[in-house]
Image (cartoon, rainbow, N blue to C red):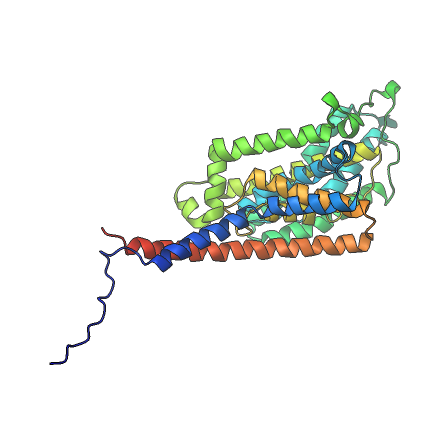
Length: 370
């Protein structure tokens, strides 16, 4: 009698998961880890490449100067991080930078009070507070338009970009404010310290970046607002049903973003001791690139301060490195655009791998004994 062939028994929930599934899960975990480290890898590549191409790139004075430039982008990017965590976008930050500098210039050079036939010279601290308040007001308008009138964040902030830039040009008449040093007799001196002061040998801009980074980290990790923000960004409807004040959170992040952009505008005007209405152009793209390159998801719910800071260093060191090696400004713009597209592509790739990894993990869990 010829023995009958037998086929292997089909796998059942009681059997251990196949080796292929476990290997695939490990591979997906490794790839996802590389995605998480993409900003750090990019920063190392930038440092190595420009360190080899330029003898001055890795010198201490050059590193301090570049970090000072990074700080401006980082201040804006930290505000942008909160907006993107909610799943929004803020394209108006560059215009707020210009508006903040022009308002500071108008006040420091003297505000003409026609009705009183006099000129007012407010103190520097009053100028700073007022400019930051104006940035917050622009952010508040963005938040109201988005939450109350259900306008898409891209459209609302894109429109506000033009509105704010137009108001800036109307205030300045298209002119530059060339002298923001102030006058001791008028009590409005000291503005240059914001951009050029060096407590303990470190520029004030870097201290501001460190303080804001620490503050935002504490807000995101230690406060209810941080938990609300991640929840609303991950699933707005579920967060709303859980009692999260989604509309207030959404409005608040645009207000904070406006404040950060206004502060960055003050730092730039202080560094140059002058203000131009065209300041801040394309800064919104630098901020978005830093946040996405740092691991945040455009869809919301994922992102860290640490990643955003590393992303800001990548953009800042790349920009200054291109200048040091003599790359044309036109190519610099092109390269920045390529970096932005690559950052978004990496974000989409990470999302695909995370979904695939979740599927593989779920299949493996279903096959475990239990």
